[in-house]
Image (cartoon, rainbow, N blue to C red; front, side, top):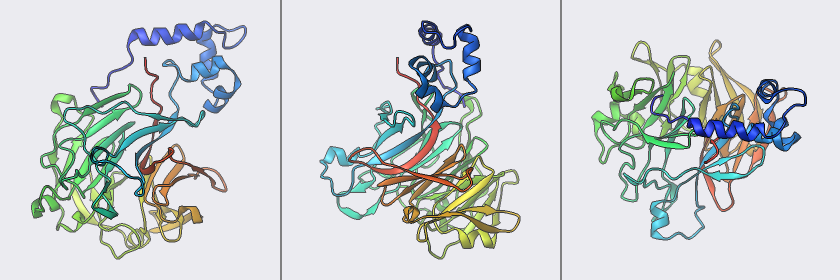
Length: 377
């Protein structure tokens, strides 16, 4: 993806000079020691000594991955009118120091007004739709206090440069839509604009983020056959060149459809996939799909050859699953009204599980897995 400012030459040189003031491995120059140490786990580098920890956080060392969250005050916390308009915060968790760190402030022009809870509607949360695309956090849709679409264009954050920037303007800003990505291309389907429109509810568009910035635009693709996918915010799960989506969240009767990216055609969802899609779903490296049954608390993996879901693990902690992210062999699930993040290492046998507590006084709206933020100058 273009327009990402890389760390300046001065910044890189400064970080390397700082490391060279300390010996990394006795008997080896630091540039060779860095190569040797790159094969060690980040957790080991963090815990052994100050010099290795300094290397771990330097620009000259590959970034480790961290949790990123969108958080909102809990419903029982009193907020003034300003807080209600700007109730969302963006934070990242350092997995080794276990410290939450705020992301840089998004651009102020145009101002960002994302609302998760409206003071007049305590029983319903307003959706905020975000994606992870090519190691970027992408905000796609939300609602303002006036109940209109909050974003006129995608807002992206690049952790490795601490940089926010905007994508191409939407042809029609919307909310309650389906969003997803395949191979670095972002797709936007259905939804509701300022007012309901059948044309918008059936529409499908894409933005190829791999293009040069001057060629960024939203292209119209084959439309949906009807507007049934504009009822609420849903994820379009990208896997093996296709996008999979259902029109209703949770354990309810639903419709499903599949978009073939290469053929630009809509297909029927396999029956077994639709039958077991009973909660939030997510792809892992666009190769396999995981879903959490929000009632049973069961995490399952889809078997495309047999058209069935294979249970990975079932836990009480996974009940009331709201949103899910996957990457680096781990599935992270926001549960219990955003009061915890349950992490499942699906590569381990049996699966290993632990819980991450949200920042104090906040509830998690969504979670993402991205490279750590670069250290501010």
